[in-house]
Image 1 (cartoon, rainbow, N blue to C red):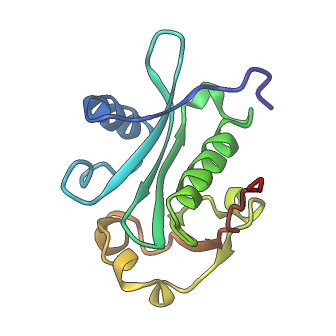
Image 2 (cartoon, rainbow, N blue to C red):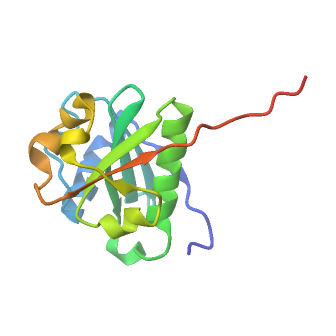
Length: 157
C-alpha cells in the first residue's frame, strides 16, 4: 500500500506525448490516442515529472470505457493501480456515468474491485465502436463491466 497518497492529475493536451511514450513502454495500445475519440486521462508523476501511472476514460454518455490503466514496473504492487482506478471511477461517477466497461489481459486485478465478466456482444454499441474493441485489444482479452453507485451529497436546509 502507498504510504504517501500520489497526486493524481487530469492530463492536458500537452501531456499526450508523455502519455503515449509511457503507455508504449508498458506495451499497452497507443495507436488511437489523440485520434479524435473523446478521452480523458488521469496521470501520476514522479518527483522528476515523469509519468509513472495512468488511466483513461473514453467515450461520452452514461456508459464508458476504462482504458490504459498502467503503472511503472518499479511501482507495481503498492496500490497505485487501485488508487488510479478509484480516481477514474469517481471522476466518471461525477460526470454521470453509470456503467464502465474494459478489456484486459489481467482480469483478476479487476475482479477484486467490483468488475464482472460480460460478453463482448452485450457491450453497448457506443463502447463497442471504440478502437480498443474493434482492433486494438486481442480477442482473448477479458471483457468486464462495473455498475457505478451514484454519488449523493447532503444538502443542508
